[in-house]
Image (cartoon, rainbow, N blue to C red):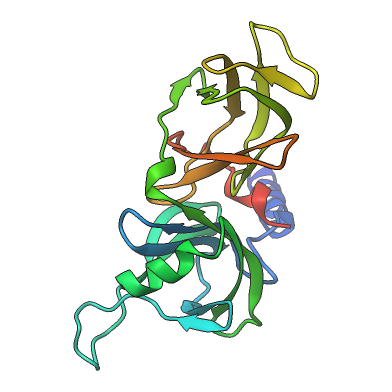
Length: 242
């Protein structure tokens, strides 16, 4: 009788294991694509399965093709290895870096803050997504409190805000003025503030940031980029895979 129970337990265990969904992706899931003017790089992080042998081949922006950074300036130098940032339940968060010249940075500086990029991985069709541009003079400092990134925007001049949004982050956005949720358009005099919260600001790259964008009624934009430093929780990567 004891032997029979043991066999039953083994059979049930094997059945549960076979029914448990295995990690799989149709294409790599790009979760962060950022051009950082401070260090002259494009960094791209993505989720795929741990067994996937794909790697970044190139990124195309506005007709120009860029390739992963090399270990040296020699023509036959190998590419800098892909970073494996995190593994969870058969999924893996990886990151590749593309180094840019000063001339390339100057070129991008004239193109705006959000650019269409086509990212090519080995054995997959190109993936189109948004590349956000983090400009040196728009860096801002936020504060993490209870898994929420808090930032206080100070109006540099009188303004009427029509929209508040952000790019390249899974965080939800909220805002308060004098501890109350304001209605649009939000009126600010010079020096007045609005408190903006991002929750949860998970870090999905080596130096992940989000881009805050505030638009006014007269078509002006105010942008700030803030670091997202909250560690990714357990079992989270699979939630980002369609």
